[in-house]
Image (cartoon, rainbow, N blue to C red):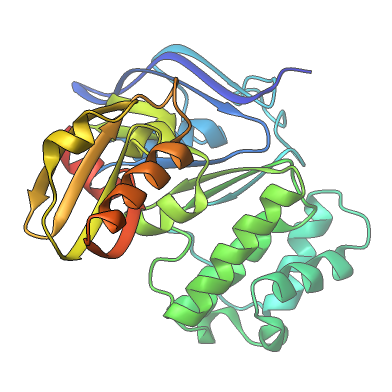
Length: 304
């Protein structure tokens, strides 16, 4: 079995003269939480839809869980999906609707699957509620419950926490983290970059339909190559820092913030950080905090 859950090779999608996705190649490994990042119009939802089999590429090849998603029924019970604008049909009680969908998917014990999925998203109280009576946040979670039923090996979530209050959003993030522990693969498309930085093992940054950058979260944020020290008080002697083994550059990025870059392959980050911080403390510099790499938001803004 391939170690890849999803593989795109030079995938292009056109809508008439408009090119929504342009020659995108990326790989998602099994067991990863993978992020799709980009501004509006970047091609995230189109890429997401092709992964689901909702849309077919105009050019290039796409494999999802070892099959062509354009083949009817190929992804049944292999993939669960939450589209960004998922709408629940009116006139159903939530529990009955999820149970019906579970039966369509051929799941054993459909009633139990529906109840378990609602429990995961914190919505057990909505079992007998009419779908049209749900708030936006409740409807979002009910739609996510549908994607989780049967514990599919691949789950695609488009803006899973949009419109949710902070407490429920945190619960949804925990559900995603728990799926990683069950060796499920999760692809998350979101504008919430802080959320993606917390959740994802790797990500792809799209801009105007093209791939701007893809890699592990450590690679994208530079966690293996730089760190910042927030200085409360004291004088930082830059030449002494740049003379340390493994340090390639050091400068005051802004008042009170020291940026240190280092050779992460030859020197473990924890050794470099400890050495620099120890030097600063020995010279009377007071430190408020240390953070590795850039924020994902800063990295995205550099690329798009």
